[in-house]
Length: 132
Image (cartoon, rainbow, N blue to C red; front, side, top):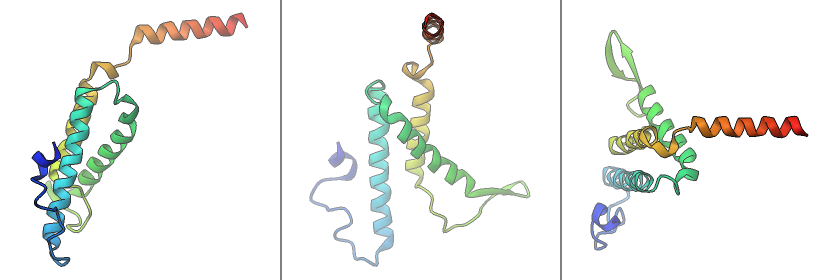
């Protein structure tokens, strides 16, 4: 999977780039973020229940990166303007992964609250408390 997304093992990502070649390193990091973000999204989509214990941490990470990207822009006279061009924000491909992850969470029926089960649990708890 990773070879398919990054390329063959013949090319060591970032190792052959000179240290001063910041654009090449940034491109490699963007590719790595894209691969890792896509991997999380695809695994979570394919296996929602086994991934449920990891949803919280990934949700925090993806949500905070999305909010950082959104808050780095402000409306100035009705036009969107970049606040700080040097502000550290995630690359677009990673932000797309974040949006896909959030969409998966919202649309996954396995993560929806079960009202009947919640009511049954609440009734059972109240019976247990009143009988003790």
